[in-house]
Structure formats: C-alpha cells, structure tokens
Image 1 (cartoon, rainbow, N blue to C red):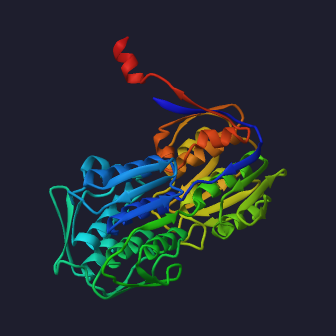
Image 2 (image 1 turned 90 degrees about the vertical axis):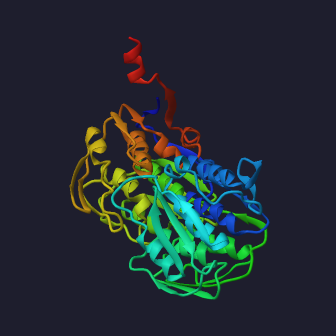
Image 3 (image 1 turned 30 degrees about the vertical axis):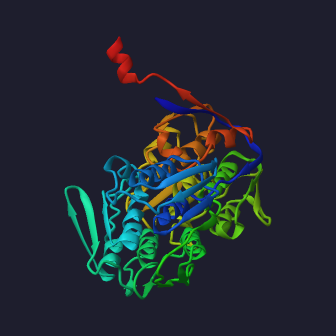
Length: 430
C-alpha cells in the first residue's frame, strides 16, 4: 500500500510550474483517432489517466512514439481493432470520448461503459442523444456500448443539449468533424478544455466555429491531416495549488497558467482575504492574515468549477464564520465530508448544500482519498493541519496530478510517499 504522509502547519514559499490540462489531454488524445497522419501532442501531463488512454490507443493499433516526458507522436493510420479493451476503459471516465472518435472516423465503435470517480449518477444520455441525432444506432450488448452510423458516416444535424455537459459537447464534436454536413450544438459547454479540443481539431484541418460560446458549429470535412499541438495549462491543478497556499499561508508564484481561466477561483480567494496578483502567464498567491467566510456555488464555466469544490471546502473549514457551499453540477460530491470531520472540521450536508462552520485549527488524522478532487482536498487539509496526516488511496490523486509530492515539497511542504506492506497480507503471513 502506498500513502502520503504530511506533517502540516508549514507555510509555503517558492514557485510551482503547472502541467498540461488533464481534462483537455484525455479528449485530445482520443481525437488523434480522427487524424490520417502523425499528431505531435505537446505539454501532456504525466498522470495515470493519460497513461491509460495512451495504452488504449496502442491496444487499438495506434503507433505511439514518446519524444520526451511531455510530448508524444501518435499515428492512427493503421488501426487493427475498433473494440476498446474493457479492463482499461473501466478505469477511466474519459474512455467515452473513444465512442465519438471511433464513430467519426470509422462509423462504428465498441466501448465499455466508462469508469473513473464515482460521485453520483453520471449518465451519458446526452452523448447518446447527440450520436442518435447524427444517424447512429446505439445499444448495449454484452457489457459494451455498440454504436454504428447507419449510413456508414455520421450526418450533420442540430442538437440541443438538455443540460450543459462538457463530456457530451466534446464527444459530439469528435463525432461531427468528419460527418456529412453541418452539426450545430446548442446549449454547449464553454470550458477551456472544450475550446482546446476545438483548437486541436482545427489545427488538424477541422472546421469548428463558436467553441467557448453556447453554440458550436462544426462543418464536416473529408479528412484531418497531421500536425503539432500544445495542450493548455491545467486550470484545476493551478486552482488546487492556489487553494493550498490559501490554506497553509505563505507566498507562491504559480507559473505556466492562463490567468483568465482562473478568474472564477481568484474571485473567491480574494473574498476570503487571500491576495492574488495576476501576471502574463502566472499568478502570485499570498496569504498572511486570517481567512474569512464566503459562499460558493459551483456552476458550468465561467462559474466556479465543480472540480474545485472539495478544495475550496478545505479552505472554508478554516475560515472565520459560517460558509455555505452549494454543488450546482453533481448530485453526490460530498463523500469526503467524513474525512474532514476526522480532522476536526465542522460540516453539515443537506442534499447539494454544505454548511461549514470554520474552526481555528484542523488536526492531523488518518484519512483516505475517495476520489480525485476530494483527494487533492485531503492534501490541502493535511498541509494546513497541526500534526501528522496520512492519506490512503492516493491512486485517485495520481489520476490527475503530476508530481504533486515533488511540487509541494519544492515550496516547503513536509510531504512524502510511504510504501507499507498490505495489511491484509501482513495478517495472512502472521
């Protein structure tokens, strides 16, 4: 078993470089399936989700060449297989992008239901609605989602999403770039990684307009050719480190960011008494005084991101006064609350609303990461707590954060990875 051990209570000082965006990478890499030629993708984060999606492409027959730790070249010209391996796909939520990409390129896809973090029902009905509207038949057989374009090629159409869905927006884009005619997505998601996927596809020869607005138009083209593209910096990774400084105190320059993408996070930190200074491609975060209460509601971009909800909760646990946190996207994203309570936090949850009464100090405890972003919040709480915090199930965290221990250690955090024998195996041996 591997865990993080944190000796908290130390302010953070120094610089942190932000990696490429996880949520962009796990869609852009499957998008390489649409390209007839070699894609060179740069600024790829070194995280387990990316490793999984690259392994899936290799299993399908893609040629993948590693140029350096953040750059790969992908050639999907000679795929052997359109059936995605179940054991890999079930480990990652973003495996659903393979449906849109395979449908778009080959008119057929066989993909297991997606895996990844479990925090409430996350159906892909909006994805399927889009595929069906574009002329695909979709059903489930033998534990696989089977999708097939009835005319052999997807057909452009007009699609209105019932809810703002990042995944559905991006998946329909993938299915539409090689479709016959124009596809219009209304009530589309506006997140930075939606724009990044559109920019990647356009750089390969697609014709996508309106990404970043609520209406995206995709005019189908005959083929995409190879090229080079660099993934944007990770908004959520940057926000997580901003939250770590806010919780622990100190001053950290967070580099390789797009400050505009962080404005929704910056605004809430400023309300809480944290100083944030925007620079061209960096933000300086400083906290010397006490944290003050605020209210937060997660919303689709440009609102406060749901992927930052557990991290902001960690800070609110130490803010003076009573804060109200409302989850406006998912149904069940408060499973981490009991872990915070082990550290002395005072939280009450009713449905999508958490009422948080700030405490003077959190105390170190043995806790577990119950999903990716909640795991990051556990790290933040451990950095700020007095005493020692041990975090189990850290594989969740490593799905989305590159070198988190090294980056935090570099700014003065006392955090290390500890490998211990599996307790069950120990008991069997004894």
